[in-house]
Length: 499
Ligand code: SF4
Image (cartoon, rainbow, N blue to C red):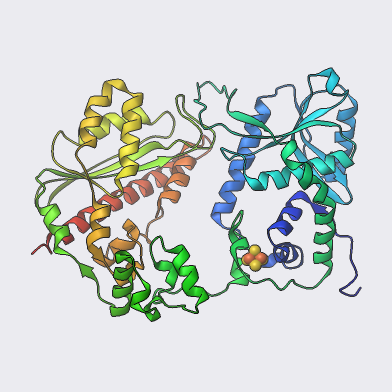
């Protein structure tokens, strides 16, 4: 077959969506799947979507699931179930023009006048609002269903309602918000046959010649970017993108041919923070303003250095929590009663029950009643403490008294310290290696907040063995302690340079 002929490739909704994002993505997926690099973020998103789908199924106990990976059998089962008594159907499977889809949820329409045998088609999403790409998704789903002669009275997106407060006891009624998007997708649905033809044409041709661009991250990061953009930034390069909050400027500079910030003329940078990043990058010299040390030296003892870890399940686990709510499960606290006289305390929930009450009581005890409480990026810790104060009125006075003692190290670092190796970032993990290189995170089993969430989620699973729980427990304690040690070292470094 020559390249201009159009082979009839089997398609699915996912493949059409990949083609909509970038024709080359679909071509690579089909012809060179070995080049795909699936990262942890993609896997986590997939796992969340699967779990949300399972929860919606629990809400319709009279529903029937078209199970199994044999799609031919799934289509036969779908036809049989549609011919029987009307009931909710999960994963109903249809095919039209060689495009195969599985519908998350079909609900029999309760209104007889809407049409005998008609269904509401509901696509279930783990987001908290309707996104543009959901419309494309639903247009394809409903086009195939309609071609397969399934009467639809509406096409809807069921997304998580972030105002839903879980009452506990496995009651998830109200977790989903149903949005009727039927009218919004009418025009899009008419284009689906063209999308199918275009995808087949792409698949039958040679690799499309498409340069990386904004499509590589919209709506999701493309797993072929390692193939299309093999250039990896190295530690000693300074691309324009390191300019903090300077995306638009970096894009302009790139268009002008600048690939290294150090080559950009100083007069192109108006923002003082950009100028500072440019200067330290060009000179290879860190800058520390003594003002940072003066601010810290003026603070009394005892001093506390505190860090929280949280988990934010899409589907609330504990009564009184909402979808994606940040639930704190761990803290670390170094207290310093005099210069360099330190003690350390920590709390880590067992993962078997709501962690918030014991987290809060132990935190209040550890944080004392006076003296500054250092955190790094205060809005996060402050918000969690305020939420806990709202939830536990009896603990609110102590929590609110602690909130007013918070001192944020982040803006002090951002305003008065800059090192070329930070490459435009003032995150704790960017600053620390420039001040205390002995405190690396890369030798830790849990080395960042995302890994901490995953570790705690694993502890929460009933099937996790006691031995594995202990291993994760130890790794979490080490990680959170590293964060507060890091704050101590940064504060001491600034203070020792305040002359
Ligand atoms: S990395 Fe970008 S250009 Fe390459 S296939 Fe993916 S979306 Fe297309």
